[in-house]
Length: 88
Length: 278
Image (cartoon, rainbow over all chains, first blue to last red; front, side):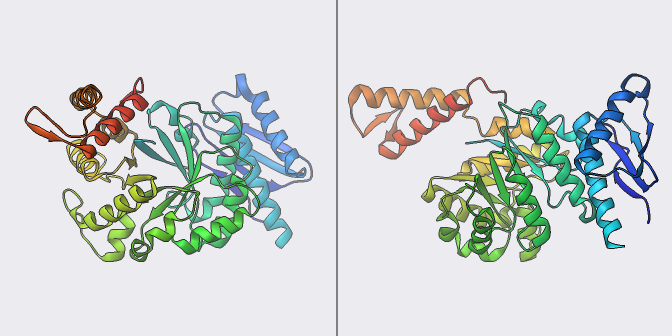
């Protein structure tokens, strides 16, 4: 299964890459990770929980996205991930 | 009634987060033409999250959905909108038939206001059927698509759209709804925008769509009665109230019922936009 990529690297956005994985693993690449890393991680986890998705590797390349944008990008990626996974 | 309707792409968080700083009376978050086909789901998810977390007191919020003939996208857009608090829907390629489909898709839920975006030649022969739908509160000219459809070239003051503009103004006036002009597409030509907007306003348009934030101020200014017009309107109304006459002369000009009614409309619009930035 190819990685699912959603979002952009434009300012105020983030790019989410989802890949199948044995467990839930979250990798954050953000200029504000030192301050907001935990908050970004929590937003990603919350979005994945809503989409009932656990076994994935998440790469979040953040360009200053607010929580709602992170949630939206993760949920869109998760929905697309499930669609591709279920079709294959 | 709104003077300016600013289109904002639905898939750009950086632009969505600034929509209330440009002083547009209304914003149209776009899920249609400005969103790439492979990113429709991303834009829809972003719109849902954005409108769930942001409330706007002074900016009306509309969403342009995908056209009815893009069935899957259209139905997914409508499903998402049904859970959101918005002021209205902009329906592209609107016709009596597509408006009926919109009504059916909304089923037992109350439709928000709808602005019918008119951009196909045939619909201009069906305007009374379009305005017969009670949820249609505005007619917007989609100039670019219409030009393409009729193979017209853009002229300095959009003279090629004169008939379409005229029909929209007449139909909107008859139905007491808003006539909204097509956006001016040259982002840097402020003088051209001003001329085009003045022309549309003089024809009878009530407001104008904008595709760039820099256009909002010019459009707001053009569609707000200026001080001279307000003062003249107030003089006409004062004279009418003083004389209780429907026919008198003022400054050498004849004033009768239509002029008095227009003066009242000018004062009403001035009051509506008083305190709002232009």
